[in-house]
Image 1 (cartoon, rainbow, N blue to C red):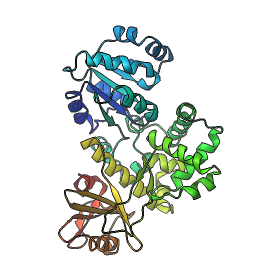
Image 2: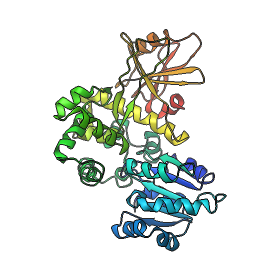
Image 3: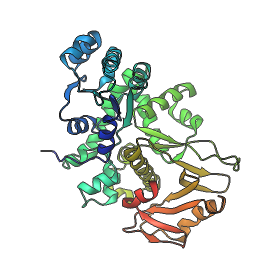
Image 4: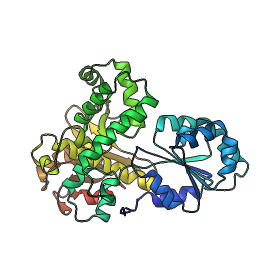
Length: 392
């Protein structure tokens, strides 16, 4: 029997369903959407459109489909029946005071969100399910060290069934993503070209995105690369982190940084065969920053339903992560070290000196330390397990 790992987003999902008639849960494949909605909404009927016969009936005869499956209803992989959305809208409009009537899930965000925006605007709340955070994994498996979590990544099946080989899982995952999602979302003449693009993005995770260099290395036109990048983001594989801008700092860069959303998938794509190989890899720092980025992002999404994060970079200074809320700044650096010291804090202090006095709330170096400790009077070292103190 598989181990169920509680998800931090569960309370937010329940709360939104108590407020709105429709909740849409999207996210990459294999993040646990189906298991989560079935667990959170046990009294809802359930139907999956992953079955072609069900999808065809829902799309061709949506009225009859909803008569056979009345709300409250969970519809899994709803993007396969675009004709169903208008009839869901009509059903909801006939009883607008009823909340939680439909829970819709989908992995293909581009297709799904197009239908939601056209038919369900103002009626649906949209949440995104990420892979497991370190906080969720550590709560269920406190025996796992952080290096093992980085290598295995956050896909729930890898922890519910720990006997699964991570490399075999990711090999199958990439093949399924290429064969199923891409054929529907893009007119890709060669899946091998897109796989090369995917691996090139993994090698650039935690770096400024140079689209011209990436297009040249992959061997595609810039216009093609733009479409591929949009699909990579929409399918939950990658995310772009935008730089912080203000009127006072005109010299700041405007180029975003590219991150893969799951460090384990990134480690597989760049060819890290075992967790122990991280220690000697020149990519360890970038993979660690990828993991820290994904952890911050997940903590914010699970608590709020969205994320607010930037980085700072000008001609002379750079800081990996910046949050600006209520007029206050939180700054953090990701460092692949077990003992962050004053040298690791230098960039934080330099950037903090550029900000208005009294507007800096927290300066942190997020490393592999076992426990938090002060580095200087203003900067503290944080382990990954304490990221919520900085992110929230």
